Length: 289
Figure 1: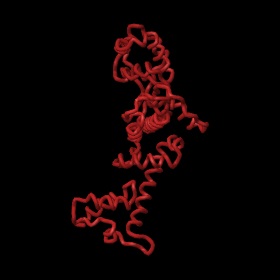
Figure 2: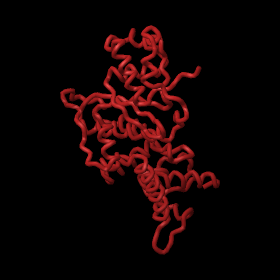
Figure 3: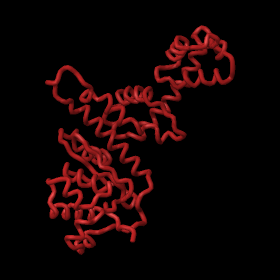
Figure 4: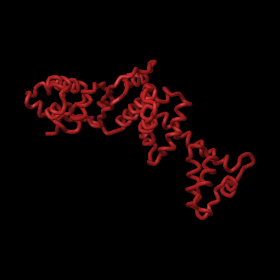
């Protein structure tokens, strides 16, 4: 090898390859564009000396396994419910394939799993075009994507800067707003609120798991859930499709009147009752004067 930088780049590629050090050494030897880089398996001994019991590749493989064992433990901590649901062996297979597509690049491992829901959604057999339109959706696949999506959102909101210390807008405050003023209302919500659209009521399964109960996989049911934090506790509020649309549009800064003009599925009376319910749940904040 020509330089220390070459050696460092090669070792990093070998140690971080999810397929193992031996496979990485062979792959790098075949794909190297620099003929001066002697990185084939037969040349590894020039870089990594053998011991009495282990070859140079075997010694590299120890670091490779340790590196991925650490990443897997981090993903298990970040997605404990998903790990519990899949089991250790299947979770490991998903995780290692995920790391091939999304290797960690941030300075903190807390960001390592942020793309796992995206990876699971992109590889979901239900979303991959096939020439068999008569096949039904595999509910189990959608359930796994939903669970990962919810679990990641839960973690992000738990770690984010919340609205603690700010004054909530209560139901009594809304009841005192005249009808005309209510229609012109722009609602201020707690920080880091997320609206998730799901294929099943996965929040019930997730909450049962967190409470140590025997969670049962929910049946297919298009739904939505609001995820937010109040008094340092992450809350999950189930939503209908209409409520999810209403909430999303209000979060985008539209007035109640503008949202009602956009949809006929919600009456002013229903909108007021919905906001009163959300105020009771602690989702609304007083606007700054």
